[in-house]
Image (cartoon, rainbow, N blue to C red; front, side, top):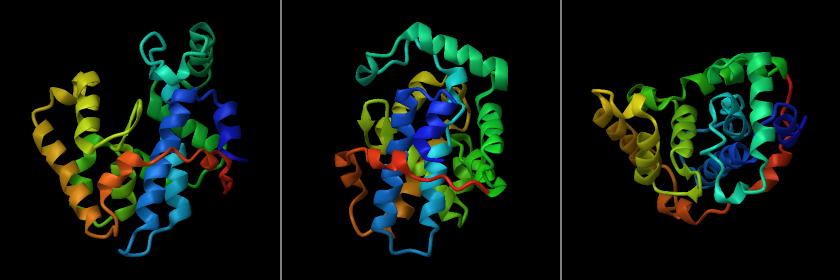
Amino acid sequence: MKTFEIYNKFNVPPILQKHMVGVASVASFITTNWMGENINNEKLILLCLLHDLGNIVRMDFDKQLGSDDDYLDTKIWKLKKQEMIEKYGSVDDEVTEKILQEIGIDRDISKTIFNKRFSNSIVIANSNDWMLKILLYSDLRVLPGGMGTLQQRLDEVLSRRVDLSSRNDIDLLCDACRKIEKDIQKYVTKPLDDINKLEIDNSLLNTIVVIQ
């Protein structure tokens, strides 16, 4: 099964598809220029392409249709969202987990996806798990309108996630993300600022997802 087939089967909106492919594009840039310890590139790309599969259930289609998605019929996507809620539930992580189980994804992949959380950034920054670090960092370089800086992405996330911006440790979490960026840059031969010029690699939609 190819990535685009999974997206179509599980009602992943184009704006969410674009985000996940964008994250995979960032990860690909990092690993292409990587001189650190060995990383399973195929697994990393797979993580990026699947990490937000169930997020349709928490999307507000009156607010979250980007300029590239003006063709979307809001009513249709609201109906698809309701279908997914009725079948899988209304909690995005739980929906993603159920979809991953349904398509037979290895549990190690699922575990990494659910460990990748901004709220877990301090633990990730202090770990030696480069797969997890790159996954989180790649996610933090993709804005709704395309690639952006880490600070732009942090500002964007905190502007719409009151549950995060109101945390007492928010400054520490943001600092941890900056530490992750510095740590990754040590092992990447090109400036991470070059990510801002990246084009989303839509050929990744044809990535074959290996069912375990």
